Amino acid sequence: RAAEEMARHLGEMAFAARCQRLFAQGSSWTDRHLFNGEYYEQLIRPPESGTVIADGLQIGLSPLGPEGPVFQLGAGCLVDQLVGQYMAHICGLGYLLERRHVRTALHSVMRYNFRRDFHSHFNHLRSFVLGSEQGLLMATYPRGRRPPRPFPYYNEVMTGFEYTAAVGMIQEGDTAGGLRCLRGVRARYDGRKRNPFNEAECGHHYARAMAAWAAIPALTGFHYSGVTRTLTIAPRPGRWFWSKGNAWGMYQLAVGQRAARVKLTVLQGTLVIRRLILTAYGQSNLDGTRVLRHGDTLRLSVRVGALQHAEPACDAGAVRRV
Image (tube, rainbow, N blue to C red; front, side, top):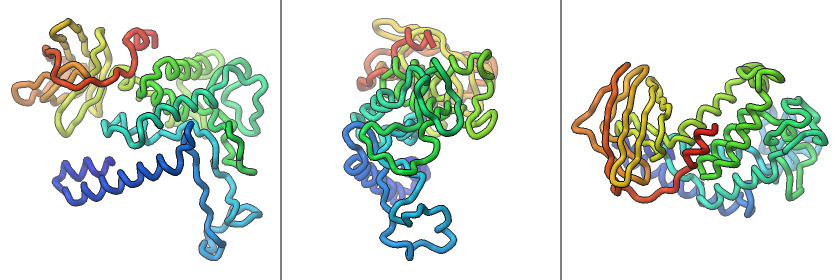
């Protein structure tokens, strides 16, 4: 899906069409074969015999041979089964799978993987959550069929994966569920029990925890396209933080019955902008391209009505409570 957009930008329309076809086929196949009505499963398809596996790749096979590969997810409900969808929304690529399936799968992650406490939870590996703390398990098997030797981390809790699921929930409108997961993480890393700047997984200061940053655009509706020079925000009154690859700042939004007023300030870096979109509200096309640098402020007015309706990801009150 991403390659399709890049090809279109470069004028490679034949390759874009090929990418679109492959995406559509893969998306349809995934929904038909991997969605079980509640979440997406891993379909384990071992080779018919070990003779088709190169000798150097047969290390680590189970005693059952290639028919029973170890360390697989199988029928589990995986915490970040929709990590690709999470990234697609961040990049403005839309839905990779059926929207109703995406929302149902995230609801299932919250239903089956979220624990209110861990007093009775058995974990055979590392413990990143204890006692009365809350968190999302890596995987659960609500429908049974757990492999004899599943992937070894399934009983653990790791923040990078939790953030992915939490942001996905917010992106799909389940703000309450997403914020509950985020609060559970921050309560564990509160500066007393654990270092709030070191969310360890496979090692200290593990980079995957930076997935938490995606909560900001998910909650504010912010998106910037460097290709079209378009900045998009959600119509939520207040003062909000924004950032892109080489710039960051604040914007203030006041929404009226007929128009919205936006005050956009660059506090660091450079922002090139041609158009401002207020999701499900309207848009403002600038008279030419504007280049905003450190300290510059742009004031725009957006009239009601130019865009089709889109469901907001969350309410402004919930954003402020974060």
